[in-house]
Image (cartoon, rainbow, N blue to C red; front, side, top):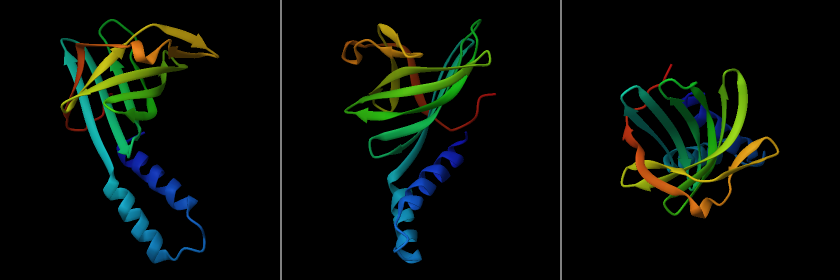
Length: 155
């Protein structure tokens, strides 16, 4: 899903929730205000043959977007994330496909300046999902730092 589609879906969902009693003018103003509050940013990690790309749409503390891992000699996976930023930490659900199989796991990133650092920690499988055992015990090493950059699509 491209960033433009995510914006359209978010605005469409919010507008759809508006009461039919609202006038066209007030709905248009509400959409303009939401668009002004929404931000879109892209982040990339590249090291030798490894590439990770994170495209984020943010409205308040809520985020959604795309996340793609292309790690050398590993199966690439691409999917969507939805989550929330609390303080300087993004905790999200990552729904992705790898080798044609859909999976769901939690991901975490720590904001450092303009960049995001991926968090790692112990995980547990619950109902087909992989979650962090204790999100407060995550480690954020500087080994995978996603740098803010221009938005582009990995193929």
